[in-house]
Image (cartoon, rainbow, N blue to C red; front, top):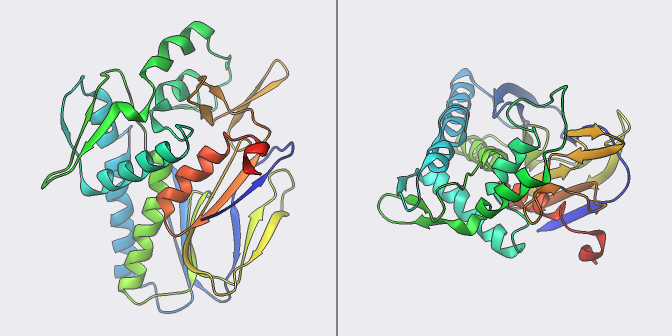
Length: 298
């Protein structure tokens, strides 16, 4: 796994720009984000495009909170109530738990109630934003912690909570997982080259010559350029404190919430790009690393 952290004041949007030669492409919309699939070897037939679209819709249904998916069912469950989950949800939850442990809890998808308190969900942005009270944050924090959710593996996977008030949202990490699943479809049909870009922050490289991470404050410019060479079949995720934020009374509050104190990230790290073999892990790590100070990278 490779990660790059960039620290400076920024405003703008995150994303990628790939150089991959002549391509064929298809566009979709899933996980509340645009999805672009580009290939350079083979043909994106109508049947393959339909298969990709169906897979995206299937995964979105599983992970969607708004559509009453498995995250919604688990969040609504009572203490010690066992909830049956799909293999896909179990796979992503297992990866999330691994990164939770690896990062001492910096990556924690149970910050969902705090994300709502800070009004980054479900109706972002809002015109009447104001930071939540200290009391509201204090009341939410005891229910945060992925260690309150256990995965029970078996013929049928299930999950259980030790705290009935704990809520979970795996929508962000599911984007990287979905990009990897689309790559599997392309590989099955012997299609190659190019990339899958899901929501501008989660990317699966099939084969490209170079990868550019867009400059967050200068439109049309790149913050860095990576010569990919023989780098193939890897996932890339970028997180930052500049994509979604509120300015209030001279302070900026970003959408990445620190599970330790219930407040937006304020570490001086503005952007993190992670490159590794697994899309879900890349998504988890890029979020967690935004909660690390620059000194922690040394």
